[in-house]
Length: 238
Image 1 (spheres, one colour):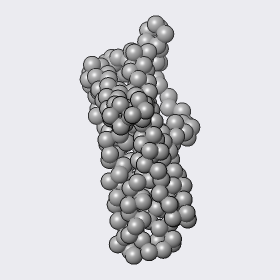
Image 2: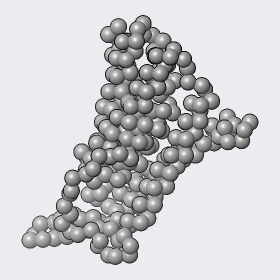
Image 3: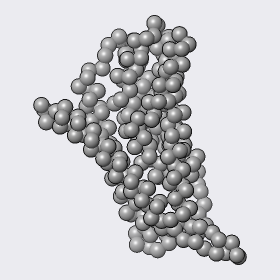
């Protein structure tokens, strides 16, 4: 019993590393100003993911039924559209903010500052930026909920075939969710490192990384839309 339940935790962490999950959280990471904030975004994604995991897994356990394949594919198609929107949002913010970096010398000390020319106003960000408490990252949680609805049902159903009771199944789902929260929080923090490092160096490198995140997210979402909507016929009715 322990090995099966612990496996749920490990699979939950591994599940967080799937390409569409990484793309979504990378796009969310471009909105964060600090490592802690990015990890919070990842944890919120994992919490939303775990919430829908519990819902779908609970239905599977209680009703002893399966999620229709066509319905599951439709949810994955919705994830594709969501990724495209997230990617375009990254590019939109990049163009809107037009962030660049400057070196300033104060009292023989060199300081590094970021400026945004939002709305055509030069140096819209003051040299002395003050961080303010951030609200709960609801956006990241909603994105995680969408991913949980789309991709986890089949994985849970496959794994729940190995448990012998509802109690084991509930523990499995709980640890799977915990694994996905921890895995995504760690992954989000790792993803944010090159963004933060480039912010201390060159404008073109920082903006280039953000543009790459946006384009790759759009590309992955478009791939899902093509495969499910065109090849599988969800959009064409084939």
